[in-house]
Amino acid sequence: MYHFNTFAYTHLQFLPPNSLLSLARALSLLAEVLACSPRYAQAVRTLRIVGCTTTDVPESCNHETVYRALDERIMVLLENAPQLYSLTLDLNITRAIHYFPRTLTALARVRTIRDLRLATFLAAGSLVESNQLLESVPEEKPPEYRRMYLSLCTGGWLPVVMRDPRNLRWFGLSVLDKAWTPEDRNWAMTLHRIAAAATELETLVLYNGSRFDANALGQIFQFGLVRVPVAVSPISVADH
Image (tube, rainbow, N blue to C red; front, top):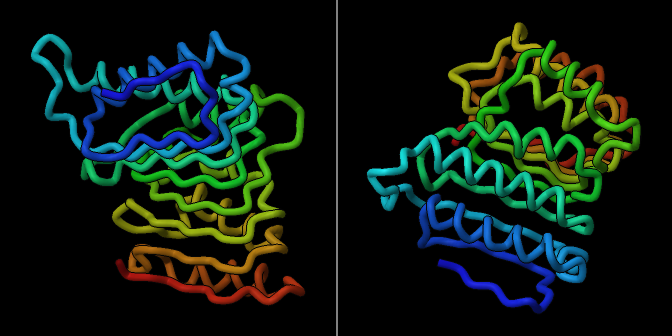
């Protein structure tokens, strides 16, 4: 279990060994500290959360309750750390794909984050739901990400959070779906947008390359990245 005092920390890390239940409790405590201490809230710059297991969930509390609590706590932290510029939320060690709708919705509204790493999540939502999310986002400049690594299952959330990739310099994408085809409009919209607008992009890495449709990728890059005046190097498609 983590403990906090009232002194302001700039960089916060929650690392293994831990469990999602202990993380939920610790993040709840942190949220309380930030809520009652504006100085603390203003000081936080980076937040790194790496989840490990769920083995300590008591019989009186099911896993769904733990996931829901953790999702809500992270959302509260995003809303109460106005200077946060780097977020890592890595649950890959749990060997499960997670659904955190409140966290992902909050990220669509947070404009300060420049460095984002998410693994492994279901970026759920249809295009209709994505349009509704866009309508609920304030008419202000969207997040200007500079570095991103996403390990996701496809969903309508992805085009929403990637609606302005102009300052993106490094982008890594790991596809958790069984395969990506031209009919998967969420992946296509995202990669088209990056290829057409990410004029500062220096590195593009696509993991699980066998799950991408090679012809669709070729068309996207042909009509996007090759027209960017700044060289994009290296471009890598990994099979692992």
